[in-house]
Length: 297
Image 1 (spheres, rainbow, N blue to C red):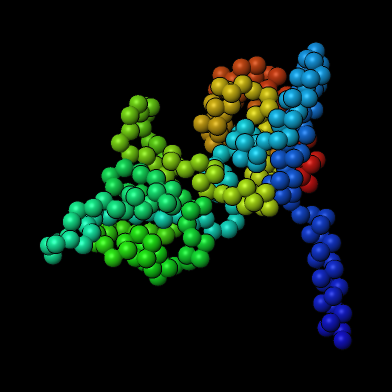
Image 2 (cartoon, one colour):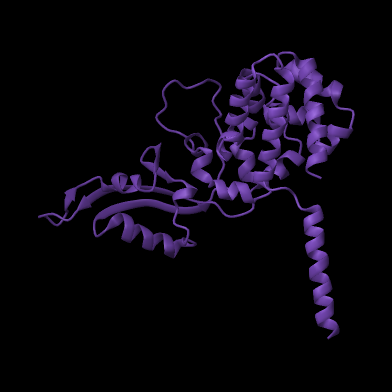
């Protein structure tokens, strides 16, 4: 009896603590962000007509989760690093593709590319293809599942030489980076990160129900804090150099940015990266940090 009562009390306390201290979901964060953006637009643009205000307000309210995230300054890399469930992708490379024919060798037939189109396969170059997480069968857990899927859904009694077939968690077992000092005009190959969009990796439901965005913001994400207050060109500079910018600041958390003495240091870093109106941007970024520090406690 004492054990049962203790279990009940523990369950009640656990649920109360979860409600009091849980992080907000992605949907809740983006709803707050949209409300704040609407308020800022109305505050800054008092002279525009009521109809224009209403149209802008409706556009913001009707944005999809993906649209909101793309405009928010959050990087796919950070979303992946903070997401706490497996996101499996498939890498495949094969050659000597043939279908049964009149000879023992069969007839040449590049069937794998056609089959992979059903799974939104992306060509990375040199005969390597990627199936993004959203198209990987949900029941695929291991190498046996992968082999069975390939034989039944792709091979279908045809023949090929399989260089490799890999099922991997893209969060933990993938790394991509461009180490070139110039921008390529034409590319014969692409990295995984360059061919995957947000929609290729997550469903809206996955983003909406998790606390991933709240975790990123709580770590002091400069792109998120700046995106309402800088131009698209300046936001692009911040996104490209975000790790370096945050390192130069000492990687402060949201709480530290909101409550600490970072104004002068942030202003200096933004000036170094030639952000327009860096003094005003600094003041507004600190203000935004203070707002979100209150909201996601």
